[in-house]
Amino acid sequence: MACFLPLSEAVKENLRDGDTAAFEGFTHLIPTAAAHEAIRQGVKDLTLVRMTPDVVYDQMIGMGMASRLVFSYAGNPGVGLLRRLRDAVENGWPRPVEIEEHSHAAMANAYEAGAAGLPCAVFRGYRGAELARVNPNIKSVTCPFTGEELAAVPAVRPDVTFIHAQKADKKGNVLVEGIVGIQKEAVLAAKRAVVTVEEVVEDFSGLHPNLCVLPHWTVTAISVVPGGAHPSYTHGYYARDNAAYLEWDEVAADRERFRAWMEENVMKAGPDDFAGRVAGLRAA
Amino acid sequence: MSDFTPNEMMTIAASRALTSEDVCFVGIGAPSAACNVARLTHAPDITLIYESGTIGTAPDVLPLSIGDGELCDTALTTVPVPEMFRYWLQGGRITIGFLGAAQLDKYGNINTTVVGDYEKPKVRLPGGGGAPEIATSSGQVYITMAQSKRGMVEKIDFFTSFGHGEGGDHRKRLGIDTKGPTLLITDLAIWKPDPETKEFTVVSLHPGVTREMVQETCGWPVKFAVELEETPPPTELELSTLRDLKARTDAAHKGGGPAAKRGAKDG
Image (cartoon, rainbow over all chains, first blue to last red; front, side, top):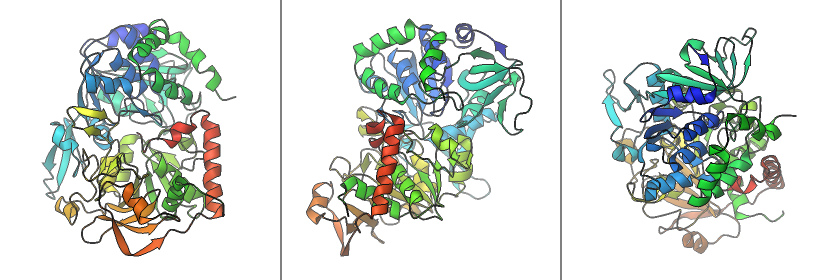
């Protein structure tokens, strides 16, 4: 049963040291505000799961919150590499991060298996791919009907998933629109789910019957954070802040500059600051 | 004919390989530009698919990432990511996977994972994203990249995406029944795999390019076809379409222009 909470409480009640946590979003709807709240609360030893860890995971890893990363593509979308992640993997700064690396197909299947309550995902993949050599969680099974050898990976079952969505209704049902990515599966695969939304509306009557709606009883907590996906975007609300992604490439290039940026823009800031960050990105 | 850059020639040569009948899984960067030039010139009915779930997208500007709102706004439909990889890619509905590469070998194997050793990398690259399965589940694979000795190497550091492996029938031996890399378009030449060995062989040099230029920017001894052709230069329509697209893209992304031109792919 979803309850409406301020973001600080929603994070405190649902994210603990040592958790396996997914902050999902596929370029669109990245739950930045929730990630920043987790950084402010100083949560430790997380296993972070995400198909496309980008700037927010770079920030969390740079702040030393993660001991392990499960992922399939770690880049700054459209810009290049993730420099804090590289520093952690290549130099162990500020702490070493163990990585479990997959392909997108594997991660998508693994989330879906988690949502479906299955122990593993089976798919046609990793053929000839060297990840199967370096990742012991990539195995194979033989189809009992055709004899075809297929790839198998364990289901993703996060302790908690964080997503950002367009809106909730007063009961706590959640609507996700546009590039819906892996969010529905990530919520249904998790023990707990926290959703930040742009706004709350009275009810969802009159919506198209096939929209992506998460019933309120699949969500643990909802926090209203307008702009909470910045610098990514929320379809129908505001555009992607491409300049911020470019700026991040410079900020993350230097440890001291990174620390100073985090102090100024995360540690001394709060959920209410996000609305101002997207003010210039809203459609006229 | 106005002057054109090697990169423009690369994009336009790549666009010519696509048809209106194709269902193309598009990598970001150079592949994305080529696919959209094709759509805006000779292949208006091509279906472009990006891994964020957008099917039949027709962006007015090139996306900076695979998940830009523009892709969703102009798509016929947008599906969840698991559906994209299961029903559409694994289901065998993609005719062409169009990939870029950080490192490529002569058999079309691609590395976008690490430079150096996997456990102790010299450079940790973003990783495979959708590419490992695009490379084996698409009907065939086109690759496009600018030539350099660092990029086109005798031996790649990591097999992110399988091409023809050690050459010959290596794909078949692994049970992979799709064609794999059938075309490589660089800023200097068009390459096709030898029918037997599967080694990429230069079949066409772009205007003004010599064999020496191709060899100097490639890390393996280059084989040339006996009947070496010259790639037709860009037409006025192709060139103006590409330049208009780039100008619209730079204006739309403000300051995002240089980054949009960088990077072979992202996820």
